[in-house]
Image 1 (cartoon, one colour):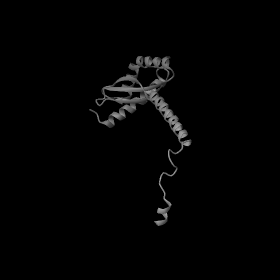
Image 2 (tube, rainbow, N blue to C red):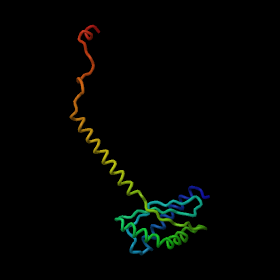
Image 3 (cartoon, rainbow, N blue to C red):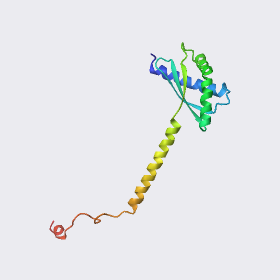
Image 4 (cartoon, rainbow, N blue to C red):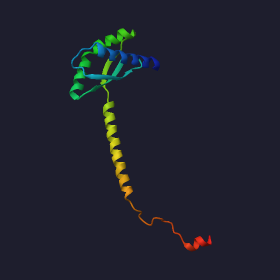
Length: 145
């Protein structure tokens, strides 16, 4: 098992290698505007999960997934060549859920802001259920005290 520091260093290096290779070496027309967001390497350094996002609709995302699947061998050999480690990790490309999660959070925040505005509007026009000053004040008690 490799140390966590070595795992992180290898993951960062793989991220850079794959991003550069996609930009300069892979010429697949199906490859959309892809961003490598993260790479996670298993503790034994045998497998690497490469997380990516694609700008575009579902068709562009599907085309990019197919292009990445077909370029996996080239990218793995490039990672092996540039890292020089004994065993080159297998690459698994995983679509990153960050954009969908961010969109969901934005929707929740918008709903919360609308609910807060509705409560504020109700509070602005609200009146007291009883007297404005609910405490009983007796003039005699105040003069004796």
